[in-house]
Length: 492
Image (cartoon, rainbow, N blue to C red; front, side, top):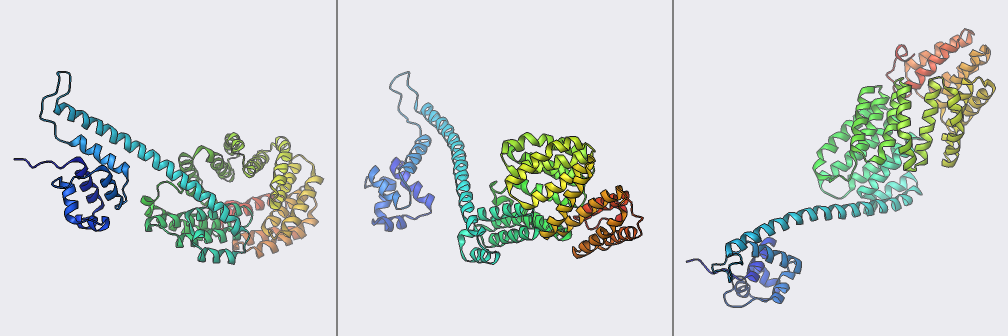
């Protein structure tokens, strides 16, 4: 003979208790009752359990009325079919009613799963936005401090060791890389230290450290330390993949793909760089497409494909305009002008110079202004306005030197040497050649680059240097800046 089925409220209490892993004795102790009372409530033998008393008991286990209602509905759906006949022919039988309840319960559970996923995404998105907003405020505190003080704050205060602060430091490192590689590296290493001290599971911390190592690698690349950058990238990807299961999609992988593409470009691995950029664009949100296309255009330009680079820039233009990021707009126009100059289309380039100059003024970055001045000199030289070009090159040389940017100052001197040699001013090139050799030696360029510079210097001293020699040396030194393995025979 089958045993009597406990009442629904008793079954609900037993179910919720066991779901918490509690024994009857543990529940009785927490609720201030005896074990026998709890047992009688669950079995329905003896003491009756009211809804009010059930809510009091489950409250000590952390449940509320919502969990009671959900449990009751589920138990009702799986309850045995009623044996009695339906009161009228139109009514469902007990078995039919049970099937209807099961179908409704399945539908409800599926709907609940969809709703739960949606609500979890909404909740996660809100928490992510809040964390990033808090990180922006904390960055303002860090930005006012010296590097050593920033390190102390990260070491001492947990609020400076959140994933969002790490991400913000990486973003600031990327911005700093446009001007100073040493500052970019310092910020990336600070992000890495914060990630090492961050809270969370080991998998999540590995993922976060992998993200930060990518920006350490990027800063090393900008500083010309390519072997170190390659080693850092290997570490970044290893940690990133080890922590894959712990990341619900908070940290954007497309940022890593985009940054590694820049290293491959510096290593003159054009196909690998372009493939990484394709993957980055496929994974990135539409708002990031402009940034990725700018990287693609620069890769194509350095590969000698200026027409393809212009196509990428023109594709990026409406996306960048919609993003309302003044720096991206400035970079885009600057690169359009550069590629137009490569193609000899100096009249078109000249029309864009005032626009990029105005954007640089609005940004207020002095190095950007000097680069625009340098670019204006190139355009003027291409249009035959040689006095204007000479003045622009000389001013850019002085300004770069004043900012401690000796490599760029020496490159501008090479461009000036091209102009002077085209005009037959071989004597004035002697001083420029000596200046270039001294600056490049101080900058630590490698042996073959110095040998190429000395050969040019000897030719300038003998007044046998030609504009074509200066052009070849300029192209070589521009490439050798970020690719120290480049041989003179390859780049010259």
